[in-house]
Image (tube, rainbow, N blue to C red; front, side, top):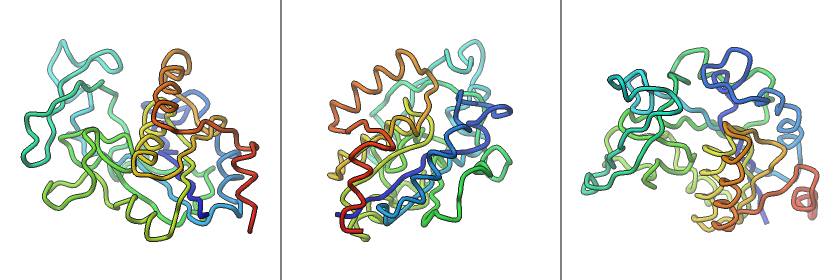
Length: 237
């Protein structure tokens, strides 16, 4: 049994007080996440960062009025993969956030980044949203045929190369990027867990309740940082 911890998007733009897409309580997660990073039961530790071009399709300001209101407006995404251009899905629009090489894209200093083994940048293709660290909104994983790749590492391949069987997801936001990462981990065949007290949500009410329904349907287990699933990682350490 080998377990990986995936710390999702603990970045300045997602954290109060000044983040452009701040998630309430996100910065306060650092002590809990740092304790998990220090846990000897995790043999591989990954941190992801949204790393968008300014022209990213999810930014409300890149669309004409009146359908360009952050949080409330939606547009239609088209799958950028060759041969898949007829595939579409709705996309919620967001404020400009985590633009590549800006302070807002940086990991927060409270995070103990010295314990991270792999840093993954995602959401780099302007044409498509990418919540999950594994794949874009259409399930496309890293592929040179896409030309403008959304992510700089094939996380599934990296985990398999290290013999990982369990994936624990934490960070922000629980109802978007953390949820999608945990669901994709389960779909890839890993035993997948989301650590509830180590995540915060854009919508901590009905949005999180719906996310939990999706997680459970996908086979993801929702656990606590001090629960038996994490404590059990000490067996054999």
